[in-house]
Image 1: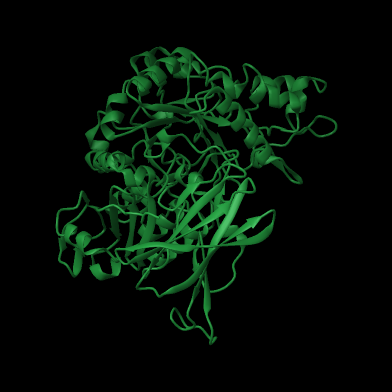
Image 2: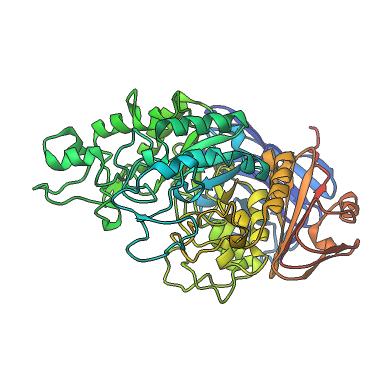
Length: 625
């Protein structure tokens, strides 16, 4: 359970200015009058590794809140800060002292003790992700399994592949996992853009389109061509042009950590130890063995200590990174595969240096491009905005949501752990996990981090969760800060017990293979997301995390969105949400989103579960100074 407590986040409601060294930024804090009377408040910042305190002043009151404001000098690339709140001795909590008590508010929450700087709020000088990502809905496409154009029929099955019909069952394990070949291509993607537009998609994210010797193509044989099996270069040009004509963006998927062992660079490196390309990789002294991704010999690891590799991959005029962002291809950004492992090997760690190099090159070509890095576990330390602008990660959203909505009988791969499936947790544990694993993000990074229910590397949410759970999770993905993510097939309720099993061909013309048709529900969620200023640029406050109930509000000056998610039928006391009388009245009207039955009185919300419910409420007014 959460009671109303002091609140701050990185949105424009609370932060003005900053982002430039030597600039002062204005920081605001809301203190609920029901919490207790704050006597004094300071912003504690860390400047050149030394704490500094700037006292705040009251700027006004309204709707049961007292607003405070302070000014902080932005001294370092990352400006860390928290609020220190002084209250009368026993007014808040159980103080054991006779005099005042002190509370620390950081990005992880409110504490009555000193805490590590790691979870402090932060404002940075890093280039924020482009505005088009703020309310975007990303749709992930695994090209081999998405759609076949008529041109695919004329292409021969490659020698490494096992030819499959579109309705051939996908194998989740065994020797043919990477060899099953269904023949989806990029013209097939282009042919389905109308369907994606109707779903509310803004970003088409393609897993690798380079030639390889597998259906996933993370084992590239070159980075300078589109796989002919996908239609070649012209098919990508056509796809991007058609997407742009609809106002959509297209992102590619790039492996900066490794190539395939059939890559043109690696072939030259193996054949000639004195070649430039030999320095691109980690060979032993006699050139008979090499480092690879997790010991998989078909994926030799790149050595970012090589200046020649940096030029070929990033800085050169026609480098890998640059080639596809320029005409005629005009990609809108990259997702970097295993970004967390790039530039890391044992004692070597130049990960952030490489990430910053890639960002600098990308934004030098297109300042409005987006760069995301895969960081499968705790992404807080690795994703600071100076390299990857946001993360593809599972720790702060996907994993806790799986645990909350998981079916106890589900037997799925739980992110490579030895557990048979996600252990069930209550809503308060979900919130604690989410805060722990997102509190090190700046607000700009958090807004650009993917909220994925599942991806091509995980089990499907439909196989993990209780009936009705995936749509509840989709609502959270759409309305929490971050980029909403749909993995192709989610809208049809497709299933899969692990990443390989989840790569099911999309049942475009096979209604018998549609498990649950969620297209209209996804389109409705996307419409709310796109129409809400609170989602695009607003702040976010948690209101409740108790057993079967999660509730939060997204807030902006013009409107707010109240989101209540339940995994079982629940009665929510309206008073516990801390709403104004005007907003309590608004709850009597129909929600803009509901996935189950709802009955509302001024005292209680009666909600069917599992379900998700969204109301539009009034905006938040910051008192004028």
